Length: 190
Image (cartoon, rainbow, N blue to C red; front, side, top):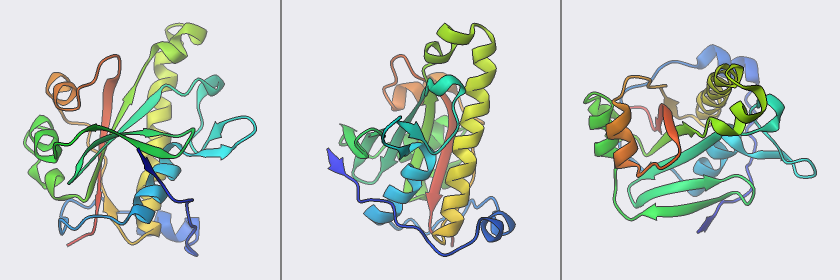
């Protein structure tokens, strides 16, 4: 387990981050600092209300179907929001495999951090039935936008990737009950 430091806030306004947000597909390949990784993951799914367990992204009925898998040079990790830690899943650098699964968008492999956002749909559909599927898709958009804006706040770049082969992505991240929804490479822009 890697305990992440507490998120530290920048002085950039949300308006400045929205204005500056662009899709970045060229990365230097440099690793992100542990503080940058902490901030990005906190923005995506971090706990913002410790008493009630609420997270940074809205979730229908606080069912929290999203799971984040984090690929970096030293392995594949699962983000655990409740304790703000990374739990190692594999020692392998799977960023190239993720890029290949994303229809050979090889720039993904150059990002210092690659987040694969997945969902366990049953967490939401058990309460809302078929309508819960739409709620999960809404939630992944909220999560992704938080990542994109936090990347800008930190001087990093990102782009949301929805084009991928589900089976190949699931295999390279060893997904079980989770279904892949988005790939979010984050890194230093070239």
